[in-house]
Length: 79
Image (tube, rainbow, N blue to C red; front, side, top):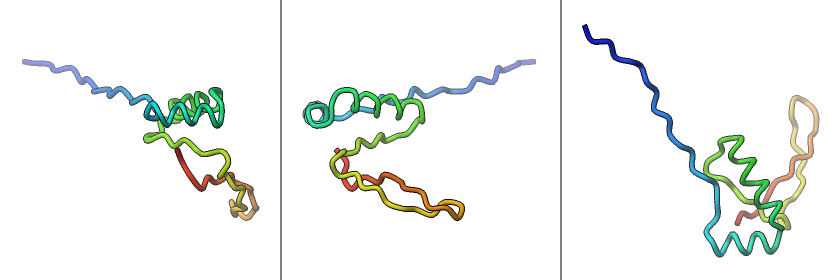
């Protein structure tokens, strides 16, 4: 009698990052703290692909959620 253990295959999640030149431009425009907070948030949420917003293009738009109006920041452009 052969007993096989049930093992789950865990895939390592990819680190969210931008290409080198875009990363440098993003950090120069928005700051290192903003870049790394986006990376850490994507790691926590497990979001792939990670979307880096261009902060100057973020518009606050009203959206109806459960009958109430909520102001949601919506980016118009990504890095």
